[in-house]
Length: 167
Length: 419
Image (cartoon, rainbow over all chains, first blue to last red):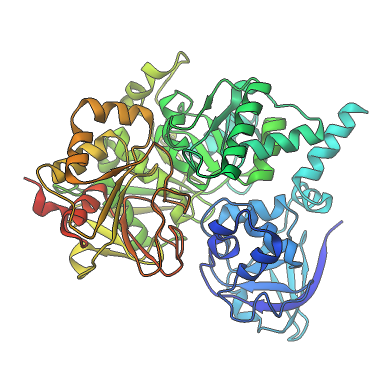
């Protein structure tokens, strides 16, 4: 059982920090004020973004703080998945926790142009560039992590445990 | 075959004899730390799900990120925190003014060697200075762990930094860590555990080790360890009734990589905007006027740091046009510097004092930067917009460098002010 996601690529560079995805001042802003600040380091993002689009990035995507708003904001924008050369480790965990599929694969940023179509098999850790006909592999996800993302994140899992305990 | 500190702790916590890098384990967590950005929210979720805490004894809750409450919205969060701490019987609840979470948790005896601790803050790697496997997690995972007492972990590879030579006069572990980040860059420890070793590590005081472990996350580290030795045990023993013993890697532990870092001849270092690994020796920083000098944060605002900074400020004044802000890392630190004359030195030099807490470090309060402003700071991160306006700039240095820069109104080598 896996999770397969397909979408149009937005390209980002190296060291995209969690401050770019969830600035401190934006923490308690309403969504319509917060939304335009997300990853606005890219001139056309998020204004031109469509739900289902995906991100391909370079090194150290999501470096910085442990704030979960970073992947949560991407998810709320409708980003389907993030594929990068490497991730800040807390961002990686937080993405799984909020059910944002992702994959790390060194050098993958050279394999995608903005506007290409990407397909990611999250569990198998295989990303395909459907536009260019190429394939990239990361480290397969253990079933427990696929379960978390399938459930919609750790909180739905916790909620289910609470309900089961009361049943 | 021997295990590294990370492997030993994850094995113990997951009930295994041996674990190897790359394995996924489910581990019992000894302590879960949450602060005023997360604790109340986690408790609200648990209430909504009808789930209790795994064990109130394992929870540490701290109000530190915005202290004291700066508006009604923040005050409401603090009110909720107090309510939930009481409702759930969390004894290790440290209210506004007690200090920064990463300073208080060890002070109160929770960071015992060999433990596994998670916290709702990226600088949770700090407790690695006590031989603790500790890392930051986000709200959902902290909530999950508060309820269940456990979480998944991928056993990281461990890399070791053998630190050789000797730190020169006026050069500190902060300079050493900045030098490390600048040399090896911000991904050298990506998803790996770090062990700081070698004669320099052994020679550092417990306080100076804290600075380096604190910044472990800035080089990507999952855990950032020092061996817990006699110094560590002596520091912790008065603060706990639990047994405290030294803890380190097995002599035949296997490391993914061993790096050498030489402290000989090192100048004070400065991280220049806007990345922590964008580091220069201070002699190469050039003429940088500063509007704000900040001595604070979990990185460098303990008694030893402030004593050394005060030595530079004594009998001098902060330059006109530059603000110096002092935020002691905890009530314990503030109490000590009130007694030993250090606080008086800061005040007489013209420093502003704010209550123990995170202050402006992460953009919270007590010294936010406006557009066009430049700060020199004893903190751990200088990303664009971190301390305020996206049109401000933050340089990082040791508390001594910050103090000397406050006196001259520009980034200054502190050694000219040291005997």
